[in-house]
Image (cartoon, rainbow, N blue to C red; front, side, top):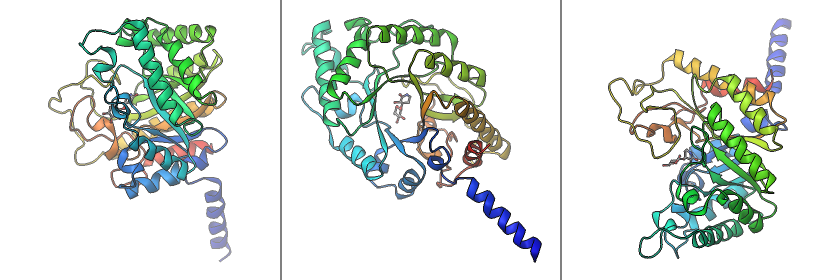
Length: 366
Ligand code: XIL
């Protein structure tokens, strides 16, 4: 009888120590968030909605604030979905992120052309950028707390990406974008966001870029490391070095689009460039019937390892955001190869917490 009581008490004490939600487990350390899709913030996915409300204290919009969604034609803004996204975040008292203002992908071609289809001049494109930022950031001023101002401006080799923004405006397009965003909402946090910054050449290029922006007075609050990861890459040492290198420039570091792709590689290089597509050959979609236990455990270990690195760098990191809620939601079911069955997140297709979820929660109390 006595020993049974002890067992019960011990179990209760253990449970009290281990928080059961992500936002509680890391409270006071960093915010934990997720990218939400339209079905979720329009409350058409009640199961997803429940997970979001219970687990996260910050949200990012998976698509609705991208240029092609919110500003599809020169004189047409489509604010309704973004309004709903922001209202959803407020209802759940979330730290609301805007993603993203200036990017080369998911941006209509007309943005860079005049009425005759000719490339714009620098001044006209700057005006257009200014109008867009002023309109979108201004509309959500004081409500969207942080913006990805520029997304993915650096190439893998560290040189500047030859995007239409860069080619038409020149390399001060980033400085201008940060200035315009700051003007439109002086209180908002402003971010530079990119993938593969863990790779040395790209990291060096991005470090030089941020150094230059800072010395020109650009109001950069934080760097977003997208962290579209694989089981074996980037190595933990590289992840840690990258966080430290950006933090040393006097900016915070956010993990903004975390997921771990468990499927065989089909593209030539590891990339999160949304324009890349790859055919899926034999064996490229091996887990249609379910993820084998050893893979489930490997994913859990990978997530725990990553979160240990994030925890070790808690002075630099203010937010860790997953790119989706359940495995069924993930863009990685269609990128870079369409129609595969991937398992990159902490919740399975039925919305149940996976071993990776428990492994992440445990790191908080270790
Ligand atoms: C992805 C979305 O998840 C998909 O739904 C969409 O089809 C393409 O874009 N880097 C980013 C995100 O900054 O905006 C991308 O999101 C994933 C890669």
